[in-house]
Length: 250
Image 1 (cartoon, helix red, strand yellow):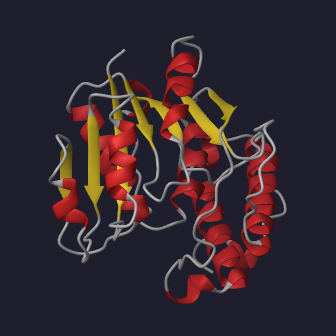
Image 2 (cartoon, helix red, strand yellow; image 1 turned 30 degrees about the vertical axis):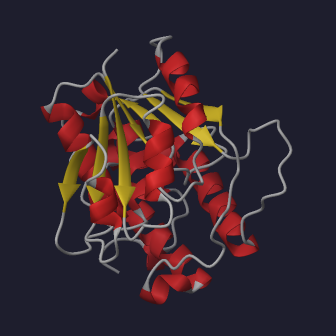
Image 3 (cartoon, helix red, strand yellow; image 1 turned 30 degrees about the horizontal axis):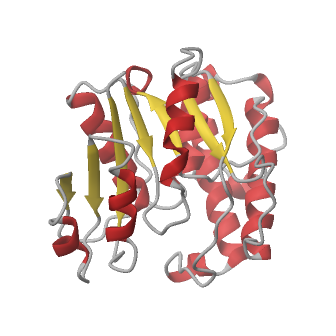
């Protein structure tokens, strides 16, 4: 089961050396997607025997994910595991994803920070947790899923199941588009617990998205536009009761 670990980075000089050192204990094939870092991140990454994609400008988290999907497909990997580089995803969980992938009955294995049985002192900011809970509930209702954590970036993907995906969302709303396309393409979806860790409670989403209400509105707009695009392949409930203000073209 040839597996690629893909790690998007943007100005992660504080964490990248530690994260790569630990990831290399569990994986041989590692891809770092540097989204235009302006700090010492590129030099530090160059110290490690990893594959790299480096962009001159910052294009967004979603574009880094799209690049990871494309790279894994083009280089004939069987599975792709994505994780963040801010020490909020434990490399020690990589074997858990590999074990679950080895059962060969899922196409997407999504980490959930809210399934973990181990108690933790970490807690997300209240507005982030509220938005996650609200969007996760709406995704479940519309797509008939049973997710507990729609936003966790620690995931494993069967690469063959990503073939033909045409993902375009470049920013933090990427999961909105992904979940709709995953259901529309008949992907088998499951979750496994991962540890809840929050190191940076002041992380910026950029511009207007730092405002919680605007961020929620943006996420819902992307979700509902994608539901419209894929409506023919989705459950009949997908667009029931969608606010006209959140629909495409409005």
